[in-house]
Length: 69
Image 1: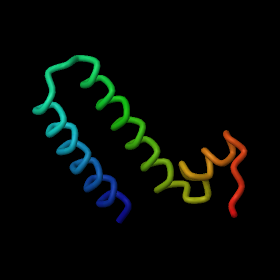
Image 2: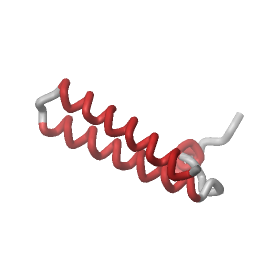
Image 3: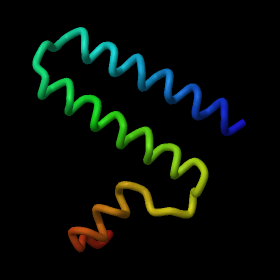
């Protein structure tokens, strides 16, 4: 079941990257699209296999010292 989730999200990510590449010709923008997509895909896979890891919100709260109200 996890393999289907990973496959589906990777296909959606590939479609998003493809759409972003069609709209821009700037190399810096393309690199940033690829980097953000790769980071998102890695985070997705990590959280899927290890759900007890902190997510992006908890990581930002830890880094910046935010507390929940």
